Image (cartoon, rainbow, N blue to C red):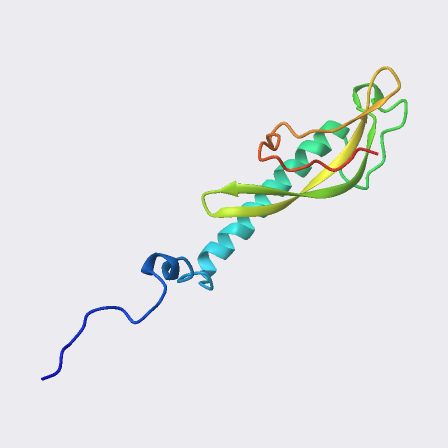
Length: 128
């Protein structure tokens, strides 16, 4: 007579194999949502910077007689990558950088009011 066993032949426990079960899974709806959310956040931050500098990207400052008193002097200088964690996991966005002229002749790094400061211990890029 033969005996039937119900023991698993696998050496690994089931908990370890379950972690890798959906690692290669791709959902086109989730990917599309991530792209839309990323574009929305980047547009919102760019619009905030345009308002802070009182001009859109590649536009010149108004001349001295054209309402330059209300204009904040400053300039853009590239962007940096920032990782945000949301309901769909981590998403990388591009955050524009700018220097804003202060009243005492120095400049300071522009910071978005819509985007909170990093609390995950990510190192910030050095200011130049």
